[in-house]
Amino acid sequence: MHDIKWIRENPDAFDTGLKRRGLAAQSSRLVEIDERRRSIIQKLEQAQARRNAASKEIGEAKKAKDEARAQSLMAEVAELKASIPAMEAEEKQVSAELDEALQWIPNLPLAEVPDGADEHDNVEHHRFGAKRDCAFTPKQHFELGEALGLMDFEAASRLSGARFVVLKKGLARMERALGQFMLDLHTGEHGYTEVSPPILVKDEVMFGTAQLPKFEDDQFWAIGGAAFVEHTSAENMKAGRLGLIPTAEVPLTNLVREQIVDEDVLPLRFTACTPCFRAEAGAAGKDTRGMIRQHQFWKVELVSVTTPEASKDEHERMLACAEEVLRRLDLHYRVVTLCTGDMGFASQKTYDIEVWLPGQGLFREISSCSVCGDFQARRMQARYRTKEGRAVRPVHTLNGSGVAVGRALVAVLENYQQADGSIAVPDVLQSYMGGMKVIEAK
Image (tube, rainbow, N blue to C red; front, side):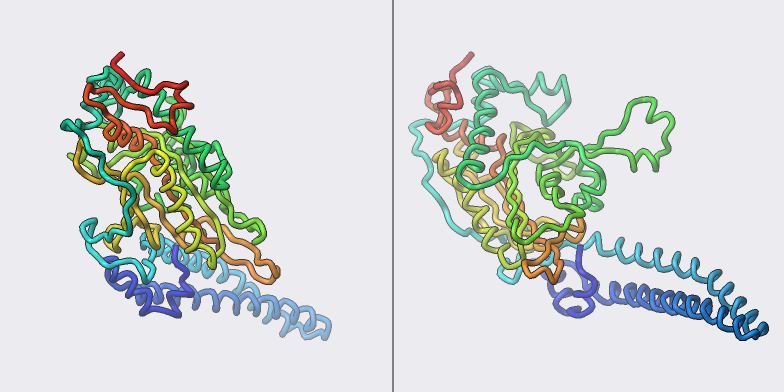
């Protein structure tokens, strides 16, 4: 959420930022709504002040035995008391209009973010490693998994429909091993605090990290049982629903919602390995085979809460933490800076890590690390008290995949496949796999 005071003082900068994201200027409309709101507040405050003053004058008039003046003042107070609720209601309505307008507007890109229309305009930052030299034609992960008898999309479809998978034996264990390895790395070496958060959250929590209102159709929602549905209106049902998290960013970032923390405790760094749920509403026809785009998947998330002065450095640090996962797995990858047309709604700047998949012959996203400034903090009312104790300011928030477990499994399958279709287990995972060195057909 944007600060209307900043927009009022910097309308040209605000509109320029929106233009870089391909959006029309909006400062004039927002300032006009805010002017109406401020005018109503001023009139309301004047009315309240006059009501209080007149009430005191009534006592003075009675003390002076000026009954005519006392009656006149009482009539004035009565009139003010009658008009104030209407002004309060009008102020509430216009404030809601301003909030409604602001909550649909994305964050503004930082100056160093490259301009562009879509993913084709992203800028490569650097690469690690090299493509593996296979003496055979590499297969895609789903071909390998199905041939091993350990990846079953048909069974998943019978259970849940499209975009689900059933993993068995060695692949199920490797999925678990990857998540445990990432958590151990981030908590043991990178200083993140492990959290096991709820995976069902309230609407206001989804709003805090900007999944709502814009991306409501991309979420899965849970409501109560039959008795709840039967006796609940559609409006109340929506108010009482819970959302399945699309990423642990949602509960982890909201750990500081409606809080004022001391600057001395910052930065706060959280990590969690959770199931994630995405409706993929806009993904019709994309990645219909395999595990790249699933409705349910595991992901290790990284979240940082810090000061404005430290957030850019924290972004680089978070990227390095996510990269280290792929370096330990010895996977070839590249880092790209997303252009203005490909950034997420809440992001000021985003790095994507794309891992090389030899079966597809493509780099595919496996992590996205974003700095959000105070955009989410204002939605969550998350603030910190400066060391001097003289000011309370919004925190800055960051989030990144550290990394997506399912896509890491895909990358290991395709990069560690052997000529006979078996999968070599990366050295760093073998201790998590009970010493297993190769995954073979069941």
